[in-house]
Image 1 (cartoon, rainbow, N blue to C red):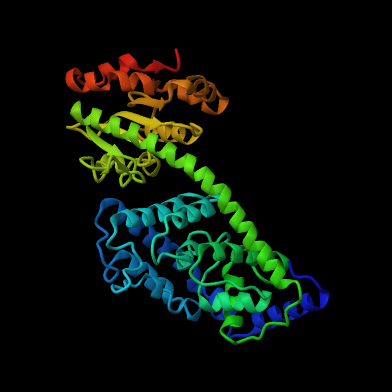
Image 2: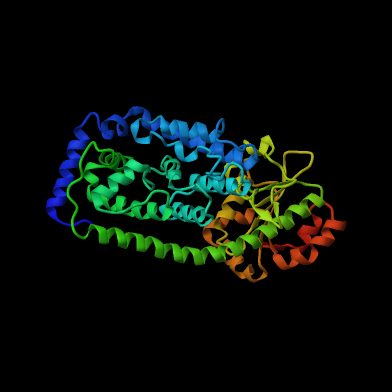
Length: 429
């Protein structure tokens, strides 16, 4: 971090003058009454983008899309976001950003937005950023941070050329546009600056974003840099790269897990279809491929209205696989595939499904589907006091091995839930 009382004092005076300037972004945008209202509408707009990508109705063009509506709302937010739409405009000669004509990249972009809507920690948001970065989607860079800022204003700063220029001028850094790696290193420095001058700024990183914007656009000159500022930037960038190496190794393992997870979902999908059920695949998984086929193929595009509007529906739509009565809006069976992660979130979604009808009587069959070797772990976790109400549910453990051994026979000769109940292992009673 920058050192020296003289420089710190100069920055403090700069911020004080900036706060009092009615033409600067602090008073003209950050304290603007409409700004908070825009957060709500932009968040809803981002959720609409996710829903359209999920349903396959987003389209292949920026103009006229729900994304254009959202980005236009951001670009209208005074000078600080002017030009926010440039990065998302379809550039046909360059084929960028490659989220319109490439359906795989489009779904990856939708997953990024969906995951960031749902998560609430910096660690989770950064993990999702690194995941999209690892896909190297052409033309999809840190300009997306402007969308993420409106989801998590205390975690992600806004981003544009002027903000980068302002940060470079204030810290003697050398942030380059277009790189998520560079953005994350800059974010680290912005957080440190914000902590140092928190009494004059805000937990909302829009404030310091506005300060950097005004410096970068030439409204305010930055104090002279100090000798070790360049070294500080180099250290930040090295730290981000080191974190990325560790994530890459973990991502390789996670990708293997996802393939296994997707394979089990595909088994349960095909088995349910063979038994005559309507199938729902988790909203954030429908676009995942198994053997080149999206998991959501031949499945419901929307939950029946009675289920979709019930309490807890947002969680229910994320259950890995639902078997739904072909003639009624009733969930007959719910499956959570627990390949290697904690069962906590899956159990919570099961409870939300059970309580969506108002009580725990007559709920669907519920199954934790996991590797054979995880039975002891599943039983240990489900016996925790936090899950005491689970004992009221009709919930069972379905091992991979038994599912693999019997699924083809069940597909050919089974009917209803009888065969699945026969191979599952009760967790209570």
